[in-house]
Every structure is written in structure tokens, then in C-alpha cells.
Length: 196
Image (cartoon, rainbow, N blue to C red; front, side):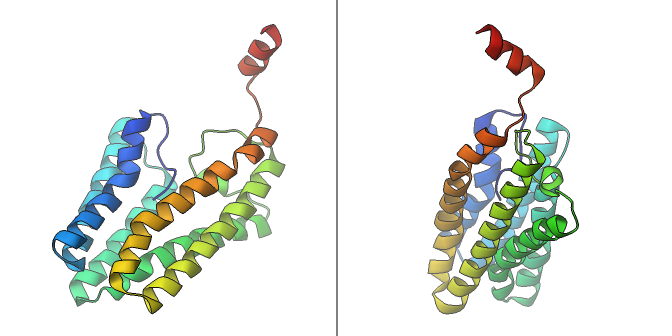
């Protein structure tokens, strides 16, 4: 899922981000892909509901992710075809990548609206971050396509849980220098720095 919920306990945020994937992984190995898909859909809805309960809002990216999970998970269960849940990450990552890139083309910094990053950046910083995230998500979409089409279902499930999450974490951690360079400090922070 990614960086969705801010303004809440970091531990609660981590549970909401990781919870649906963990139950998907556990249910897959306990039963099968169809049960895992159903449980994943339910857990995703619960995570979105808890996000709203904690923060009184559901971030746009989380809404989009939930809708995609419901559509492709529903098709998987209805047609009894796991292809749909396997292609879901491709659709998700490729669409977000295209939205971010399209926003740049039309002069809009969509990232400020669709991602809940607890930072305030200059426009140049947002542009650079947008390019990086768009490229990163495009790479994840390609990676998902390569793995589900060419490797076993077990390998794809492992990638979904233990591949995408660490890669996303590492990617966003690697953006720390950019965030620090282009962050716009609030007046309060600047005055505290001056008096310190």
C-alpha cells in the first residue's frame, strides 16, 4: 500500500499499511489464492475504515488502492482466475506512475494531493520527487509483470509481500536527502533554529 496515513501513532500506521499484505500472505499459505484474495479484500476495507476512524479522512492513494483491490479481487473470486489479483499491482503502480507523470506534463504537482507525505517542499522539490516516484512505480509495474508471467505463484506472492514493501521502504528512505534539501520550514521551526 505505501505511505498513506499520517497524524496517527506510527505503530498504528504500520499495522494499517502492512496488515492486509500480512493476512494475504498467511492465508495464501494456510489455504489458497482465492481465500487469500477474499481475506485481503476484507482487510483492505478494514484498514481504510480504521484510517478514517483515526484521522477522519482516507487519503486519495488509499482510496484508489482500495478500489483497485475490490475490482481485481472481485474478478478473481467471481471468475475463479488468479490472473486478476496478480495483475492488480501492475495496474496500481502503472496508473499512479502515469497520473504523476501526466500531472507534470500539464504543469500540476499531483503528488501533493495524492500522497500523504508529512513534509512541505518547494515546487522544484516536488517536481524532482514526482519524477523519481513515477519512475520507481513504473519499474515496480514492470517487475510485477515479469514475475507473475514467468515465475511460480509462490514466487509472485513472496514478491508482493517481501519484495515490494522493502523496495518501497528503501526507495523512500533514499529520498531523505532530497526532502531535506527542498523542505520548506515553518516559521516556528525557523525561529526555534535561530534562538537555539
